[in-house]
Image (cartoon, rainbow, N blue to C red; front, side):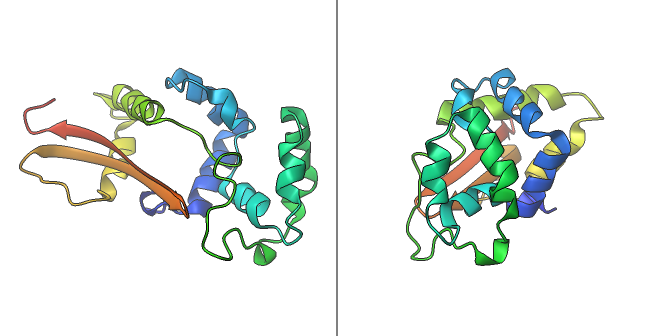
Length: 172
């Protein structure tokens, strides 16, 4: 239920459970064209801390590092920042949209949904994935046309994603 409403804590728990490396690797398997853009793969809280820690200097330090240095900064310093002091969008404006984000094109997002479709067709063990994606339809879906609507969305100031896995009533 938590992941169906874009619960950031739930997403971070999934990332912790699966592991940053495994999540980063699956991007390529699922067809992401430039998975290196998301390395190291950030948790939601890490992203918010980078964008809104009190000194305002951590983002620039992070961006100046290579992947190994970024990992070290996340583990040694970012992890120690208290969430209560973090204000990533104090003025309601976008922050670091082109540099500290999860990067995926529309094609990459479609590839993930297709990967999930292929991995859940006819397998009772993976069927709950489709059920989770269908809890929240995001927008009003005309059920006369769409028998199934799986949805995952997310947003922050300046960015929004509404990604669907749809099956028509004709079975397409």
